[in-house]
Length: 76
Image (cartoon, rainbow, N blue to C red; front, side, top):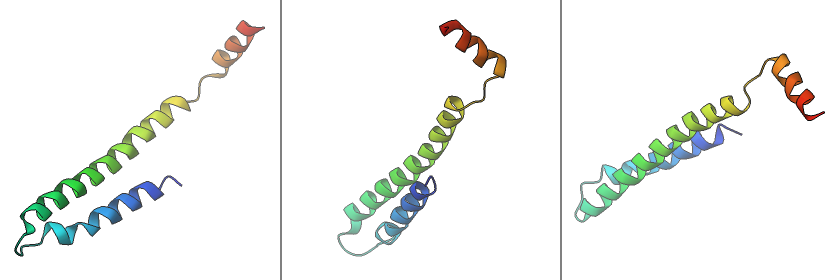
């Protein structure tokens, strides 16, 4: 399920490429909006992958067995 987020972000940002490359009349606002939105989607997707992976490793880091037993003995 972790791979759903990057795929959705990249697909959504690729949808804005046609808007960002538009050079027709009235595209001044459309181009800048598409650039900002696609950049935000890509950066948030990459940051989510990096930050969530780092947090997952911190939370689920394997502690030595002795520390676990000492923690359990402290409560008994």
